Image 1 (cartoon, rainbow, N blue to C red):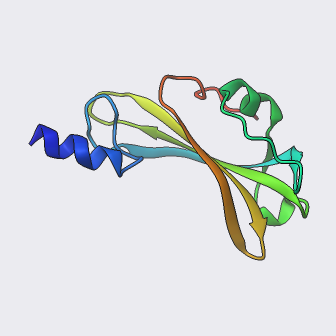
Image 2 (cartoon, rainbow, N blue to C red; image 1 turned 135 degrees about the horizontal axis):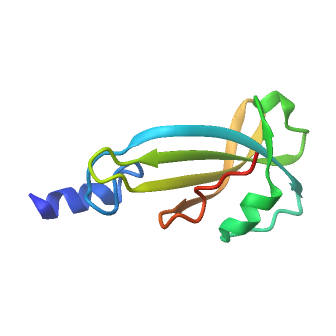
Length: 115
């Protein structure tokens, strides 16, 4: 049973990496990335970059054309209390999202979100 749960965890971002229980979505926010524009995108994997560079928006329509956006989703495990944050960087293009990068911060790096 434990091996099966570990294998399923690989394919489920919302499963706890500590106890392998299904995690709850606790917070979700959309951000614009004014420093990241079409043709000038630079991939970042450092949580500090996202904490400083993101500008909160209420909806995609507020993101200027040609500017990348970022969706942050925070998960919390009801079984052990572990928290993780998924960061999805994308370019809004004609009602679709062209995903550039998806990161998981599983060690508390993104628990303080930009306002």
